[in-house]
Image 1 (cartoon, rainbow, N blue to C red):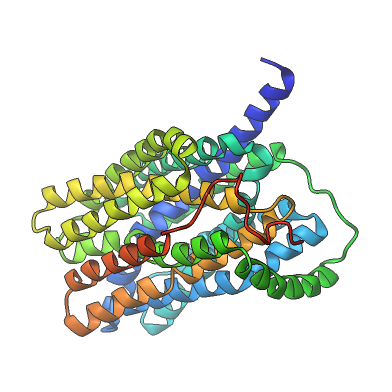
Image 2 (image 1 turned 30 degrees about the vertical axis):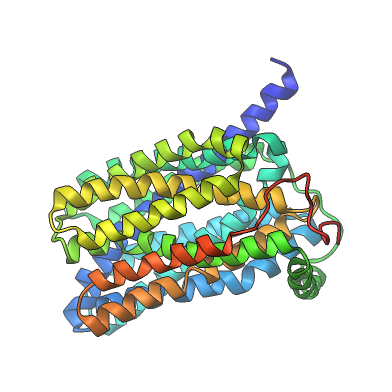
Length: 419
């Protein structure tokens, strides 16, 4: 193996390790913190737990969605992508550590718990804008499906490690140490990423000037994207179907504990099944995504997700829901990896941070309506089951919107060369 190829492989693995680290947050925040916050902090005050959790997720996603194109443009104009990734990582880690201050204590703790959780999620989700933007830099077009899938697979392995660390802490009722474990895993495995990824190449443009350019570029980006039919339709579809995916991620543990009466240990076991099957889905669907195209994988997985939503609605016994969780995991790993590879195929060279910022805008904005819908339906009907069934509509609409979208890089959009 040549030195260049060996170095490329090391860079890919270093990029993947960031996902290994921050997946501790992804799995335990969406599951264990949601359960702790709603059951221990919100419910004793008599407030609607799902409504507070929905508002927390929706507000953080809205903040990321509104800022993503701007900070993405700043990264492109200043050449400071790695620095911004470090800043968002720091915000997330510090906010997670601050969760150790949250405990039962009335409405003050309800608000503090929501504010810190939203800030931590902004750090996590905002950092992914810059993390995802490295994909075209570290992998050639014919391998981006595999590399994207590898990143998610390594991330799911990190989730399993996080669940393993959380298990004894949950048994000992040491919730605050769970948040410390998240922060430590996130930081430790981010170190190889920052050491190996391509260094920033400053352009000499100040942050303030770049911010102004970022605002103007965002408006120009919206115009450019609108002139790229395939990219435009993909992003609209992504906006819709990610609503459903994110809703499942943030409410699966709540559904298991509230509707199916899972214990904390049973919930961790369910999450372990999801991570294992998601890892399998990421790895297994990587090669077909490169060979048949990410559009093929995404469409198949959206049909799969409709079936998962219906099965979850019908679930009565914990054992059956564990099977559903495994099927959801397979779909989760596949659709996330294929969607990122789909986007990478459609981005004109040199506009990675900017357009992955817009990708985040669609994904995060599309992560607001689903959680809000889930919370509203649950409050109105008094049951989470109708809310779960409603999620299937997001997958069906996304599937319809993908009709006619091309993912062949040899067939560029008319405006793909616009800079």
